[in-house]
Length: 140
Image 1 (cartoon, helix red, strand yellow):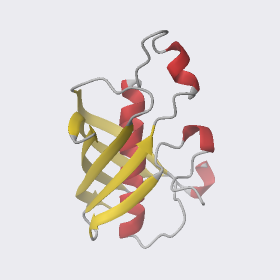
Image 2 (cartoon, one colour; image 1 turned 90 degrees about the vertical axis):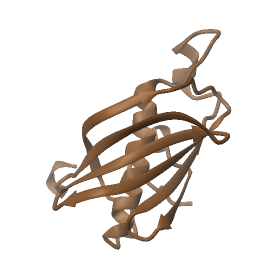
Image 3 (cartoon, rainbow, N blue to C red; image 1 turned 30 degrees about the vertical axis):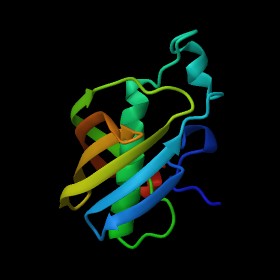
Image 4 (spheres, rainbow, N blue to C red; image 1 turned 90 degrees about the horizontal axis):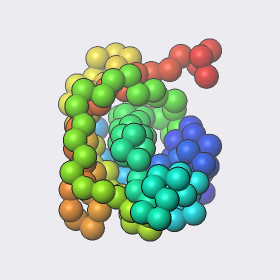
């Protein structure tokens, strides 16, 4: 299976992706393997998914949606340009699957704003708004 993101295997937070409303909405999923290295130290004996990696799940899912709106088949590097707001509502643990729903709110050339909502087993765990930017090929 080819990667859904331009990241290496150790930093890909998107196992599955589907467009749910053409050009506007998508859903991604990531199963959190308990052997992922960050779980050992965040926090020992009571591991939790770092909040910044929940934001990364959202950014990667938003990137997959944005690429789909541009008709791009292979993973295209987009960078997280800004976190406008993000709220963590409950902890996420190893072995859980994070589902990320993204909606494209605004696309302004090389920038796009997304509304994101992350859930586990149907319960909302985080919500926010992010902006992605296109990364020029010579900066990769």
